[in-house]
Image 1 (cartoon, helix red, strand yellow):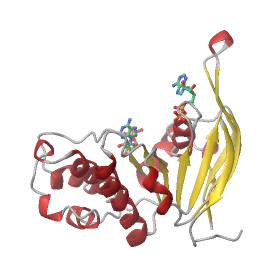
Image 2 (tube, helix red, strand yellow):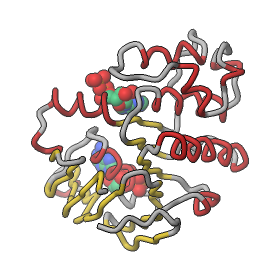
Image 3 (tube, protein in one colour):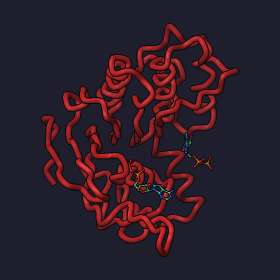
Image 4 (tube, rainbow, N blue to C red):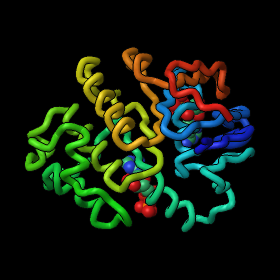
Length: 229
Ligand code: ADP
Ligand code: ADP
């Protein structure tokens, strides 16, 4: 079924001569359980799109529905609750707390979530259980990012939004991180949207959404998980 219904979304930053049209009328649906990859040149609007569906930013016009809830009808408290309960975020930089072990970093989230898995289980899904007592400084970049993924999924979010999760990694390590996202998708069925330049991604995407100049240029159906309306 449709998880996100995005309708004619525009986003304008600034005003007057400095105004930037980051999104110019984006309409698309994201389907349950799929991995959608957002591709396109730098500045084409991918991060803006991800931030808007994740409730971190608001459209200038148009709307986004998550399940049957229109995000623009939520007030700040409602949006915060939406982000907290329904969305896991993964960014290029891991933002782990250096003085806490991998397990403790994940536990920070599970202690405040409503229906979390255990931190051990989350780390198991990204294949890092044996490293759970290590501090971030003792982990490679790819391992730190897998801890960040475990932290993002431990609250069992409906969706996982990843903005260049492999951007700081070499391509080989990037593949290991992408495999962790595939494992999450297969084990938990988390609807995933992912910005990446890693070419290996085509093999694992259900759909590739091409952005250009703030618009969706093309949507490629790759995988088998085709969702009829
Ligand atoms: P991408 O993720 O594809 O690189 P972005 O969504 O980051 O694209 O950016 C789209 C456009 O919006 C770019 O021109 C960028 O400079 C601009 N932009 C993004 N965020 C802001 C902001 N907070 N303020 C002003 N301009 C922004
Ligand atoms: P709150 O005000 O409830 O803390 P936030 O907007 O700060 O809400 O964050 C909501 C969720 O989004 C949290 O899980 C937070 O970790 C994540 N998040 C938001 N922005 C960032 C960011 N720039 N880097 C890392 N995580 C972020």
